[in-house]
Image 1 (cartoon, rainbow, N blue to C red):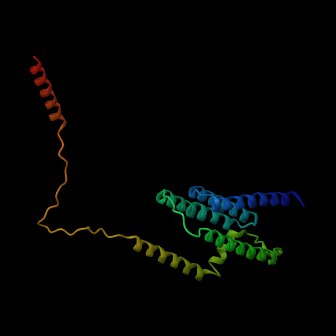
Image 2: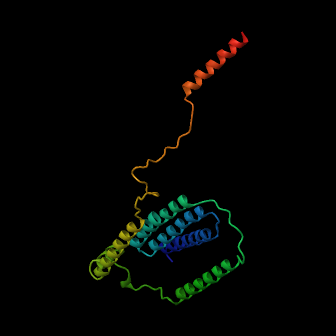
Length: 211
């Protein structure tokens, strides 16, 4: 084993420990803000894994899309919507954690079988000579041009649909006739100047009575 392989193994171990620890923090921490920040740590660890696999384009997309957009959007949503609320005890509250543990164990077993059954040896022709970014770009604009354009059209349709759904018409709550005027609700307050004059008059009257 040479120096490069040793560095890759050590980097893989550090990224794996970081990913597992951050993922456990996302699931186990009760503070949702900390969970969102640790989710960003998970995304960074995955981007590091992609770099170790010489997938620089996927690593850059992981950082730009998931960390720069998705994770930031989640944090903004949590900051704006997070409300302190007292949770009431529920009956059979152990059912949800038990089902979550069973589903997580099933997914872990499925991924373990997939990892053990997948041949991870790379052929000499498996590594692109020009880099993954150039190779993906060539495939996008040659072999997969039609699916790429269809995906862009679908994203455009989704964006337009989201704008239409989020649009709100400014309609008044109560329709008033043009002859009626809305009453102005004001509080009867004494001006400060009058308050000062009245206090002076009161003090003068008190002085006159005493004199």
